[in-house]
Length: 199
Image (tube, rainbow, N blue to C red):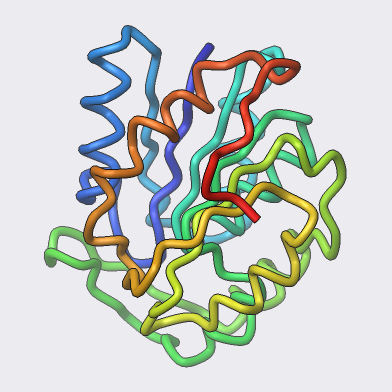
């Protein structure tokens, strides 16, 4: 079993959620990878395709936060692996236009130039509907200040969903959910449990 963590827009692999998951996976001896996604959507897709080539999908789980959740959905549909989505953005091509030009990542460690063709690149990666919803676990914060959580709730309505009551976009209490997420990552697909709080 192995897990890939995909961080959000202008975030980094060293984000709070990434660090918490990395520690939980290390404690359990599960391989954990967190690539830097500070690149164009086309480059992200190419990198993920190369990285997962040859990996048995039943041995892989991808965890994605926000924009990383969008990429995680694309990867799950492309490869057949499982996915954990944390406040995933549904239509990022509509949002990225507000960030054209040079942007600084949170924490100020990196800079990236967002070009107009990012929107088209993201649209090409869209998966209008998911297949095999049992492969998915979706966490949605009901007080998300960045995204309308109802959009993801509708798109992933056939998947297992866990609502984070009054949770914010970054899921400030993420440490409370990381053990259950890691359980999902460590369980073979045919034996994935249904979270008690799911809809």
